[in-house]
Length: 523
Image 1: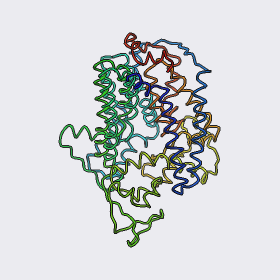
Image 2: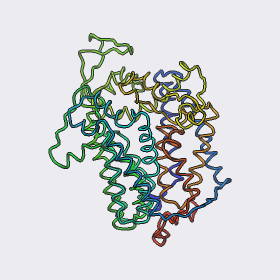
Image 3: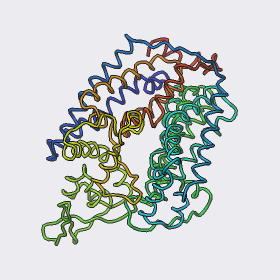
């Protein structure tokens, strides 16, 4: 039972899950939408890109068995010094971000700000920084996407005294700017870690608490941030508990997931099992609270076109009727216009009908049509002229090229320009690589990603293996170049390749774990 449970969260299984998600969301669904729902040709092209990518992902995964990297440590560092250094740097940058911010989005949500005001507040908090303050934006990305989740897992692997403090501080930090999925960077790796030691009671508890809390956190952050509502957001918490749940969306997962993964490694320890399930159960509660208080997807009715109703046409070509009114998910299944426009930004004009519908559309439709819209914009506006890395800040700076904010152009084509000019529509890594380097970029990036998964399947670094779940999440939704550079993964891989420290101080405990036995069998 425990062995089978761990195998579902092993690096090898995470690779297969990654392939499955890529196949379903970016190959199967676009293909079905093209043939069954009269989708445009760009859905078919996205499916083709995904098929080619999956083929070379498997090639890269198998290539890791032939080409093995031997770690070349040139310096030895105490694990506690490494953890303390990263965490102090994180606290320093958080202090600078908060002190220099024009406003705090979380506080603005309690001031009855409308959606536009909240969007502007969120943009000004970090993304709209100019000059030297841009350093804060990239430091935040590097620390919270790779280094911070990694050291959080290390604190649990080495059973440090203040391990919970290392998890909770970043976890609560993720609430203040109301980003719906930011918390996933912490909760997903923690869940993966907890699964390794799932046979420990405490880690089982942490795991399931974290799992259950995720949808609630997403829902809460969606509501708090104001998406899906044109009305003012009034938040009046009645007690401390309600105040706590109104703090964020999914940003806390950046800290929670690595923590849960860590708990799963030492699941056979009673305390770790408790931590695991508490974390699992807390995720949906926090997501729900964050979404509800953010003001996004506030309950509204939508109109359904009928044959005898007077209709109003907008520039999207969608006719909105005035007579028949439905609310909730019913409109999605009854209204043909809603069904046809589900994989389109225009669906927001058809179904501003509730939090649940908004979240379903945001999770299962937006990533797909954002990818197709990116391909369409690339072919129509830029005439298939490859960008050669200009969409990346690092590569454009390195080769002295003007950076092209392609993600912002995609967002602008979908929703119009925003007041802060910081909004962006990020798409899956295969699209990012295609618009930059063509089919060659799709092939090489897929081989590299597959090789990383293959190299880590035999790794004894539980913290790094646990981090692969958020690495997968980042490249599926945020691009390959941005994950490597802005997310700090390239820097983290280089550091771990040349730096040696004792990751496992509890060797006896670890050697008796499912992870060690699994490695001996070559899982």
